[in-house]
Amino acid sequence: MPRRKRQSYKVGMKIVELPLDSLDMRYTGLRARRPVLEKRLVASLGEAGQQSPVVVVPAGEVGRYVVIDGHKRVRALIKLRADVVRAAVWEMSAVEALVTAYQMASGAGWNAVEEGWLAWELVRVAGLSTSEAGRRLDRSKAWVCGRVGLVESLPEAVLEGVRSGKIGAYTATRYLLPFARANAADCESLASKMMQDGFRSREVEVLCRYYGSASREGKRRMLDDPARFLKVLEATKLGDAGNLGPAAGRCLKNLELLGNVSLGMARSLPAAAGYDAGEGTRERLRMAWVRARDRWRLLEKTAAAVFEVHAESVAAGKNAENNQEVIDHAGQSNADCDFIFSGEGAQPAGDCAGA
Image 1: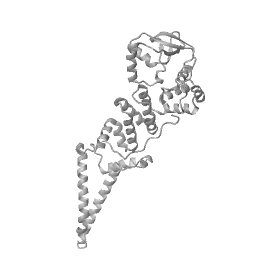
Image 2: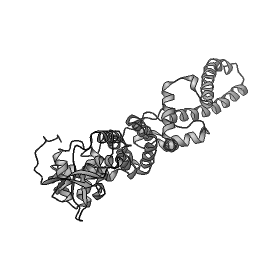
Image 3: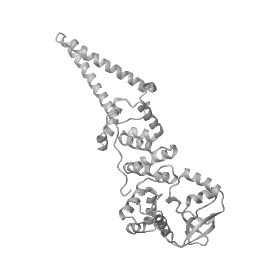
Image 4: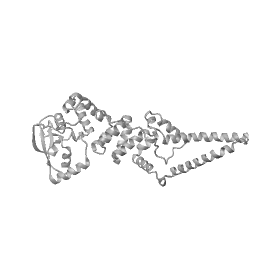
């Protein structure tokens, strides 16, 4: 839905100075923190003082006020050890003030998750119907349902990451929302690691994409140490043979040797088992070939499980368990091989409805 043009609103108010300890910050969780901007705000307020008043409404208790807009300024003033804050006191209920503040901004500056928190507050806490909330926000009922569904679908760890500014709202809605709908527990685990390691949006996209195509063991290892997973993936993309680990180096040499032996056998077998070979010799060669062929087929299946699983098969859920069974049966679950990549993997579903 396109943004509406800003409109003029007449709100009954008075500008006053209030003690900081008289403020009720109950709605601070409706907006995401932006650490870099807040650091700049502290510097600006320290140098020039408070230029714009925060917006508050009476809390119902004498001398107490609920902050509606300006939570960042309040936090900055607290860091500066200020005693008072300039505030515009709106004479209306807190719910009316939340709606009015959103309308006055025409939604500008609000991301999808913040809008979800606002819609959730109006519907789940204030008790408005989705139709009434949509009417007050100048949005459709479907928009309200979509925003409420968004925040109710995201795990708490993701919401906390967005609220703290450690996870971007775009990352949460574009990549983590489809992930959460597929496996909420694993999404929560990844979100916790994201807040520790500070992954970029592109890195989260890579993690979610490869999660969709990995075996069960590959998923576990990726979630145990996603930062290391990204390093391994980057090293793989570089393709520098000089950086191969011991296990990979041995595999590379053995595969090259296997290829050379196979080529040599293709040339020498016809003569060794030709018409002039005895029946005993031909039978021994045939049995050796059967054993070699079975082992070759096992290796072929293992290689397919590691390298060649297509996104269509992954999306249909056909190969994840079979791939791991093949690898386990082959005895190739090497401790030096941390992650198993199975092609590009299925792309997460699109953004949430109504987003």
